Length: 267
Image 1 (cartoon, rainbow, N blue to C red):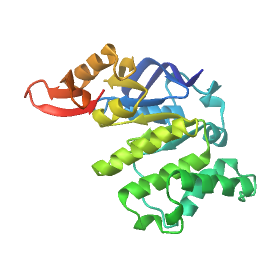
Image 2 (cartoon, one colour):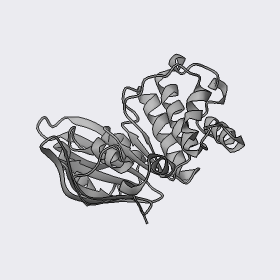
Image 3 (cartoon, one colour):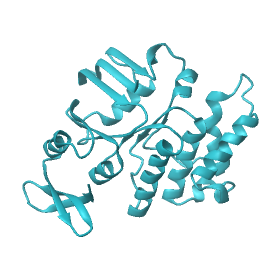
Image 4 (cartoon, rainbow, N blue to C red):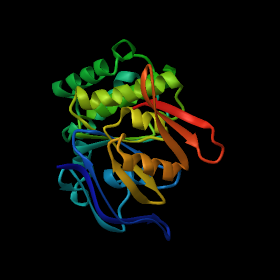
């Protein structure tokens, strides 16, 4: 079953069309990265899947259920979304993580034993138990992002969406966040879909990559597939070479015009 499926979706803002009859299936049980130049529609895909935006035409389903007929609480039990921009709320880490339990509350919105247990599991999984009572505003950038990831983990949905989860983080925190995202799949059985601006991180940590440009899907598949690598070259105007050395094989990315190395990552 596809975790998220878009069928002949058309969408845009105002009179400007962004997608026209876009069809996309994201596999269940994988870490999928969506990459492409700015403005190609990556974040809009997540907003459509989560029900924040409505398509002009076409249908969208999550775990086989039509998003358009679900209530907001029903959608929040199927899919969680961590947006790119989120300010530090005036609360402790524990309270923030507990916010992820909202879709599971009853009418009176009271925390039950299962909610408290889910919060504790999320804190432990994201290595935040020692910081649980600290105000979110006092955390470092990497710690704060882990706190928000713990919140979506506590939400306990089969599908988790991330929009630019490594933005504004230093290199060490970027790798830490990506490793945590992979653990959501490997240790918690989640399907993870992430918009990633860093080609290196997308190729390194993904089971599958979707390459987009100008609202169109250029290629979809494993990072090492020739079609995917060719699409990355086309979308970003770079040249990719597979290099072999004592430490293993590496993908080297070069700017086509300047002929200068852009980045490299292990294959």
